[in-house]
Image (cartoon, rainbow over all chains, first blue to last red; front, side, top):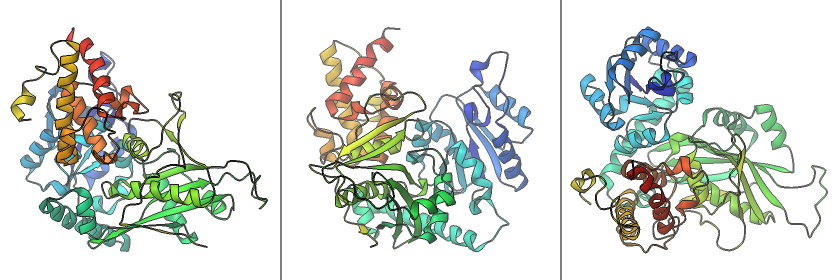
Length: 356
Length: 108
């Protein structure tokens, strides 16, 4: 259960930058202001960690009208600031969430304090509906999520004590990634992932259940779901892909036998909660295999190039995908790889099941 | 590399002539790669070694940590300056990318 949220100020709580604004100081982000008030109302404590002078914290407290239990302003590492807040408030690191718009700050805190829940501002907008931010709401899903967090804590404790490489630990934990064609029952979860994923999302636009259902029924398309579990627990569907098989049409007429066909992944996504457990690498390897089995000569993954999805671009690069020319701002880069030569290997904990 | 070396700031990597600076960058990058990947062999690789190949085994998580360490140590934000991440092809391409961006910063 989250008891304290530590917020960045510039371009997170404020709709702009404190220092660069001169006389015209930016106001609070309206959506996050609502989140701040709601958390405060629920008894969840808010705090600030910012690379700004202390006056910035006073300004934020004034314009939001929300009390902050701690404020760390300075130019040191954010993880040190978060650690001081944890110590000041006498909390466990696993009771703390950290929200920052900056990828490098998020990665630095995630690496130094793995128990802290690290979120994008967009994630934080959803957070009040999550069970770990909802002390009073006990639904079946909430109980399940609570149990998932207990599992996560046990997994992290064992990983810290383990000592070997990450791959060795994934094997030791009995990690299983099952990649299969999505069934109709899976569509609500795929829709939810398309809304909730930001750091690992190639398209940046939600896909409605109606559209998913129509793609599910189309011979020219394929929907893939990735499930994750290990001996600590079952996380269910944590990733997915929407694929255009490159057929000319949906009428069932096969394309020219000689024509080279490409698979195009219009959406590739993974929950940030599955980070570090090999899901994305397994999914990319499986997509390459399935595209080859379907007779495609190339796998294309158009990917919006933003600062927030750097981890996704790294995974694409690691799997042998290369982008063409530098894309225009706001346009996706055309990451692609030929399906010849050595394909990315499927990790030994991944299973690909293909429905007939 | 000890923490004392890191606190010493630009000495070694950021001073001296081009080749000396580049070899300093290479040495620091090897140490960073050894740390973020947890693989001892990553700390002794040749400049032409592919970072996403079997020797280093960079992935989305360790790659992000590498970019964070590079920004802290050299002040170069690779993800912002090379959107396609082409400079992460090999140890040498990353060292050259960082080396090209160091002199301007040191000249201030």
